[in-house]
Length: 433
Image (cartoon, rainbow, N blue to C red; front, top):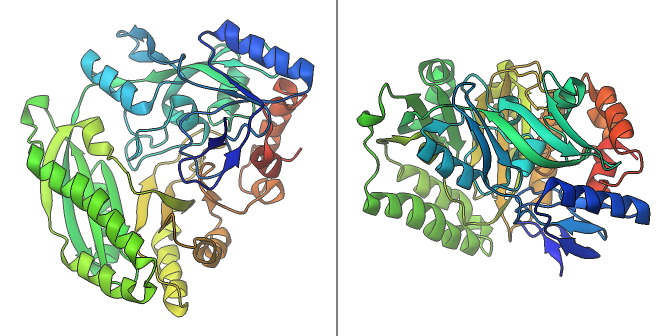
């Protein structure tokens, strides 16, 4: 049975698949693979655009039997779940418990293992990345050892392994710091390019979480400001019909059809984008946090995202626009813009610096390489760090200068996986041997 990722860019034919239902079963799989000189990869939902989760020709571990919440500590405000749990399932379970993650990205299909291991992040807040919200995890190393890791137990592995790329071991459980359930008010507002640049700092300062989408070939953006409400009783969710029309039909069905058609007539894309941008309207709604943070994305796309220093973000965006306008490329998907406070996770894209994220997308049937190849040098020149789960061209020799503790991480990998039981082509590229 073959494996492929969500975007359809990566494919593999593993030697076999297994669905372990316990830490002991994971240990047995790792020990067997090591003895056979093979590899093991715990592949989740395949939402990474890179081959980071590819099992290659080794053993593919399925997450289906390692799902659900294991333990809840209401006093410490922590929740432990199996690493194969999808984020959307964890969100639903936390809501029933009256709890919530502090922050999250806008897609909730990923397994917890995949989301934390690739540095999945949201925007704003006290922390943006899921990995920075970890209180602990259990990990099966390449030598078959089961380690419990936290700030007080195997602290070095916890410190370096929160964004572990799947290179240090198989995550069995993850423990998140959580908060009492809260609600967000979302204010979506179209803005012009000049007004957005002039008011960006004010927008970020005035809301807990700010996201924006620039429509290429236009002067228009859509901004989204999420702010916490004082009470869960204050929510005013979108009605069922309105949610279906805006978030299901328009953002998925209609958008997918229009962008797919535009692939065959790219000359119409600038006019199409201007028309779409002109139809944007303001709306305000509020709901439980995870329903505001996340949206369903059924239109398959390809994506490249880099984090540049926060202070340089708008200038980098402007340079990317200039490069696109000088080219003959026609891009139908918006560019997503987010910000994040600095964190202390060594392989996080926001490690020790406030960050500005620029995410570039194309429809799955459009040629993405020329677009990403045009933009990536600008992001690299700005000191950008690529998202580990999204497309980029960097290798170990490029990344070592972007992460002050990169050598420490590679040394820990040598210790925990000396025989490279968890290696694949992507990890060999970004980490070396």
